[in-house]
Length: 216
Image (cartoon, rainbow, N blue to C red; front, side, top):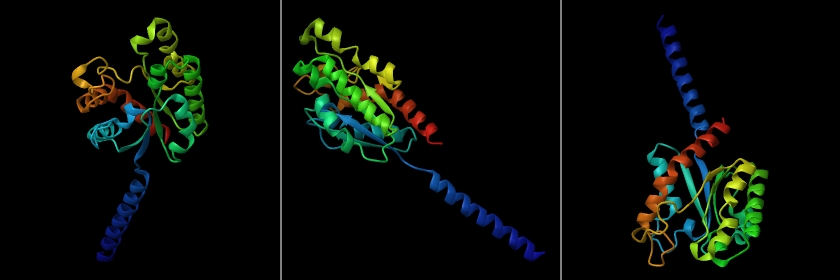
């Protein structure tokens, strides 16, 4: 009888160890890449105060095991992004937050070209089976209503066409708010990044949930 009890205890312990090993193997960190320009790169901000770092911290605070890599390059246009999309988004990436277009608008680049570049980036990521979270942008007022009429609808049109997650305006809550911007009046300060993260967080959490569900 004592032998049977010992055998049973051994079986329970063995099963527990095996179950724990399987659970550990299944657990993984979801890898996101923030792909964009200076708004993503944390222009003139102290280390750890940029959007990717603060988004990662906010996701972890919600109990989500997510890492957010910073693939932002200050001054990047959609043409620049297109030229580096393949090597800046490494294999093993689970999702990309695609944020580009602000510099196109500031430089007056034809919206048709901006849309074509963004579309090609989305298509390349889709070919690699990497989901896209598209962060939209609005044309600055000084570009005039005609330019805005052509530029502003780009993001929704692409989101509808490719059925990707859309966050309509990356700078929502920060644009035109002097206390949330650097002295240049364009880039967010640390408080501004906090506002951006707070506002975008529910949409990103939903995006991460879709990735997690698709991986199971």
